[in-house]
Length: 102
Image (tube, rainbow, N blue to C red; front, side, top):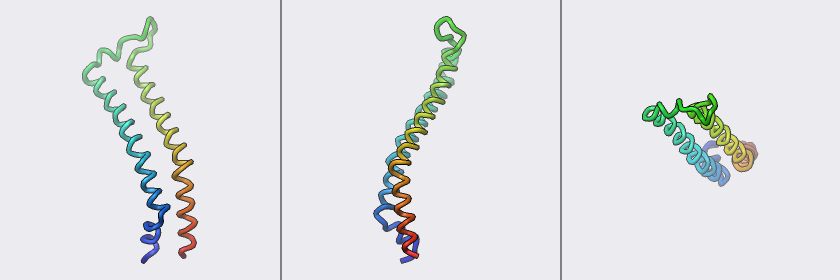
């Protein structure tokens, strides 16, 4: 068995691939949903985006755009936290075991 195949057989590697899929797909779906929702609002209700919020000069469109940016920051924070707690320890274990295979 060659070196890459031995790594793929490690239980840590199998868990790493599962852990990545477990976080990447839900976060990706969440971001895509938010972006498409904003695009659909722009496409079908553009006038509503220009409406001011309250008596101020800030429009609904600015608030939604800022909301998307903040949402992406939150999603990034969730991923980084998960990666630091789950993915990185598994990666270190794989690297350590792979070094012993040489």
